Image 1: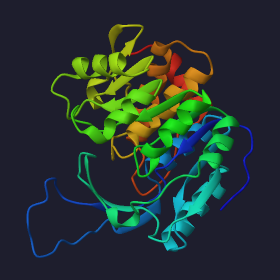
Image 2 (image 1 turned 90 degrees about the vertical axis):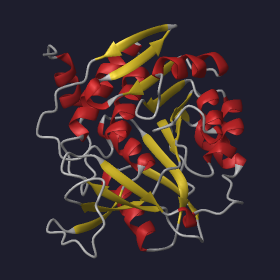
Image 3 (image 1 turned 120 degrees about the horizontal axis):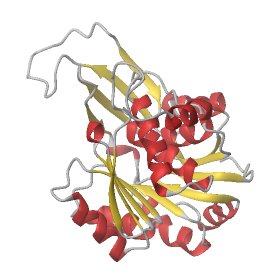
Length: 305
């Protein structure tokens, strides 16, 4: 376990792991005895917490990441990724192994993720004193919805440090997500599984402490709820062909938080998120690459088509 706790802008909790990327001819994938994968099958470090942390660091924010990581080849990839990008990592030992998933990526960039849930244990808990120490050295904490982050929410909330979370493709009803939705000051989620995004967003704000709720909608842009007002945020134009949507939501969250920590209003933060999310869609899933600050600011300042 790392004990290095430098002063940080953002602490990212949870979501460290490894993905195996397989490009398939179509999704859903029809049954067949076998498929020939000419593009190769690649394994690389990078799950939701990793991508948010790397995105924040690429934008010049001092970032620290904490999670359970196994003493295994996957854990070695996670540790190497953080060293390469200069992101501090507090790695608690996980005997069950490092989180891993298989992502099937279609020709249009959509993905189907298969998560290995055997890599967590019911009794896993982040030590409260560690949480207080890391959060106390941070301006902001981004909490992923991976295990066992839910149990960390009361300790983090008691520190008074602002929190954010990403509910991903929440359907608005699954009870697992509600503690995250109600504890965070900034809530991100995807509109994919929401029959009524505005209703869900307003319910989050009414029942929790969220000042801002953002529901991303891919090529349709995003919905922004701030100060009780719901506005539409247009999608940004990708700077290159779209090859993979993996990590787009994480890039959106990282850029939005960058704007928030820089004191920008929610609309500008959402514009930053849209630009970074569009950029992420042009990066192949086999790479962990984030948009830099200069490019983000330049692109976000350009007139929208």
